[in-house]
Image (cartoon, rainbow, N blue to C red; front, side, top):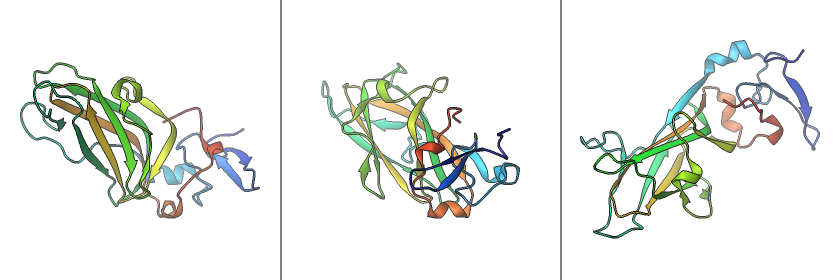
Length: 198
């Protein structure tokens, strides 16, 4: 009977055999590992936010995108998500909420992501916040998880569609892998996905 210690086997088109454990999304066999109980201590849920946070009293620990002037829209500001050197990070879900200076909910802005290492964009145009993010109760689940290498940087650009200064709280939810074998992995097969997401 398949389980975490004996996952369902499968083969890719090029003949390589992999296993697909239910958690985490990454194949343990592909990592050179074969026992969930022994390896789960190196796999931890983790949440990242952007580095450039405000420390003021209006909206503490938020990312501020100021308006450019009265009645003006379209101002953009870039931020970075820095993955620390302790582990690789698999990005699974995205949440975001925002407010104006008076504490009113604000959602009129676009978000764009770029991988700094490969300089690849994850979108072709800034996407409206309501179409690409969720809330803490109902996060947006990425169509495919993204493995971000340790010490790598993900750039995030916010573009205002309103004249109001906006304070943004964004969270990239996922999993940290404290396993040295992950250093050589850049992609994983789509067959390794599982319907039971993290």
